[in-house]
Length: 459
Image 1: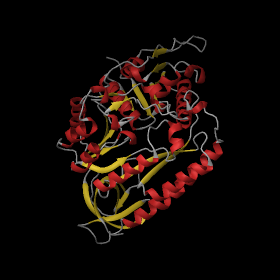
Image 2: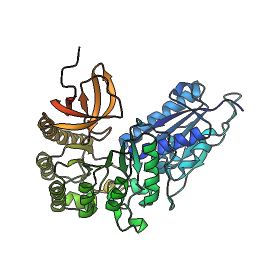
Image 3: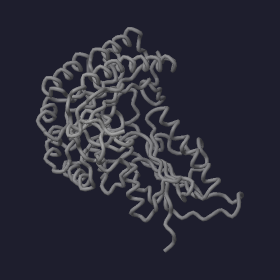
Image 4: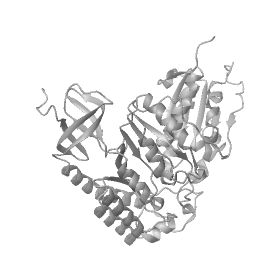
């Protein structure tokens, strides 16, 4: 047996892409590859790309270009590019960045082992032609991508669990259906099996993800839908927090709200990307919802689940968005009381209906509107943080930040995207829960001490 192939892996994109990265890492490790964090010492560099927005594509192209440079200068002999950008652009990537050795589309994810570990003879000279690029491309076909046996990138105590792939919503600004295909859900038994594996691997927090989690089960004919799945996952032993992300507002039912309210392990947190609030803009976006229905949903969530934490995402500067429509959105942000919010300046995607609309706003104006929305939300979030002072809540410890200083999250703080809670104490352990009393707020973040250790930490 020869030396194991050293593979460096670059994981880009959202949590859904991260699950793909973890699965591919697991497959490579099972095949005998040695996973390394040092790209300069790798035989193979694999980049799992995002292709959703222009900024993400630029980041991916930069990572690919850097990997190709390393191949020319160092021990790296093979560069493999996978993921959404590959599915979107296909062989056009080879013209954008010459030197790629293999392309792996999202629907042929499992071919990453073959693509990465293919034996490549060393070139005798610079004039020796390189082998042809290996292509693992293909259109969507009905299948269930099982995500077991992952080599997880996240800390051991939390994990993402994908319950579905693809989307049927057809928002006019979105490229996901073209890249990932129509929505296809994992059967309940597959979701539960993956959850049990993650729990046995140490995860105490499970974050449920998909392009549209609220439509879960529609393609399966599973009548209980997301509400039924939440109740099934809630019965699993081991996970203390189960979090719902990427919920679509137009299909959020009372049964789902009841499940969120009733299930003790389901944290009272909803990630609800709204994108806009003006009716005309919502129609232009293809969102299948109105301002009245949106406000009714927010009201039902808050009445049925007192204290529920709602996070949202908005798009600023959509084609044709008038100053008055933007002001309506800005006022809505100030009044809606979201605990957290993300804003994207509209990204012009040429292959989408929105990309062909008239009234495209200058990039500078889109960014200015995004900044104004975040400034308005900042006031809301800072005020909410101040209201937490004096309250007690459970915190999941993430990591130690210094002597007598740990960083964690309470149930209303999702990993990676939300604020954090700083816990001033000694002897805490990542992955463990501690009851904390909030003593102060620092911008978005909270600062507190464990209830059993209120005295000041020694300096």
